[in-house]
Image (cartoon, rainbow, N blue to C red; front, side):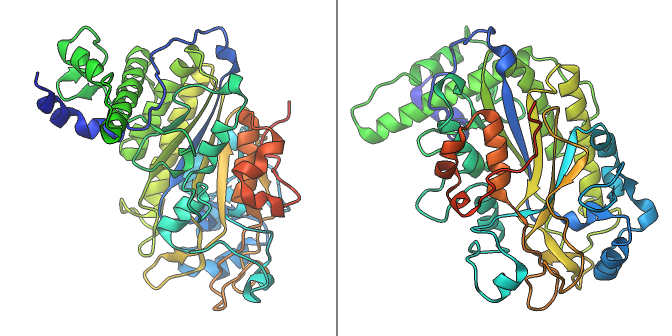
Length: 450
């Protein structure tokens, strides 16, 4: 086939997978497969309302109900969590009920009132302009980037990408920073690139099936990926194309030889992404890879109106689909013997106001409740200080008393905990998380120590 025809057919896929810098075609062997660790970040774009995910069921419920008004979940509808933690008893949104067993098995932990911070802050200090706060608060695009590591400077990389680059050399490997969507800030490094893994592993490049190296079309693409040019622009295109071909070939072969999950992930974009990640993880472990971070994301959580109800775009429906997908994903990893190898964290760009908005929804805020699960997680607890759900309360930094809570746990502290588990030395924390220089406590006890 002619060169121009191939470039036309494969250009989009090549750009989508442009991240692969290193050759992925070498087999690293399975001897070190037991030393595999992966972090999967599930990012809920739009600002998920954590106030209706983790709800106090003791006397504090009355304050929650008063502040949330028409958004408040009936107490008898909540899925109860065992025991007490952070000074309260809790229940989950009924749509998250499938996750209760993970919490009760001490494999899932909640992180209360987390979010981006430049330095420790109280609501009073924020109202008095006595502390520096992250810029562009409540802007979707900016807060997604800041949560994922953007330092609002020329460096547009993310904390996972920077951390992976600083791991000891014995823990580094190709396809370490992976995204399943066009979002990539979290896993973008300063010197390395991002690998794109769509739901089919980018198997098809036009008529070329990358799982069939004997195919003429595939051989032609592989030859194109090795072209050499004196012109800098042409050389960069060839380098990018070569990395994309290598990434896509590795992913396509991994998904082809993997055991397909048998659980019901549900339908929709999140379900397809999580099914793909769950399918590939055991193969990456068996191939001898060491450390990986995956970014999975889905939008729809900007619930300014009609947050409650049975409609497909309500938070109630979105959480039901999310919990179904996460449950099937977790069951497959456990069945494949991956429980101790993977930590999954669910986070969002920001939280919502305690006070409902005029359209039956909530507005942009700051601190939020996240959760993480997996065998290494110190589960069965709520980490951090659970905020008082009171309009104008101690954590409310909004002059209008709308319930925009100042985070008590910094995103950087959560990220440092995860990257330390992957092998990032503590003496390099500040290179990955510059704002941690302002915090005496660099990590949180999210993960088991033994």
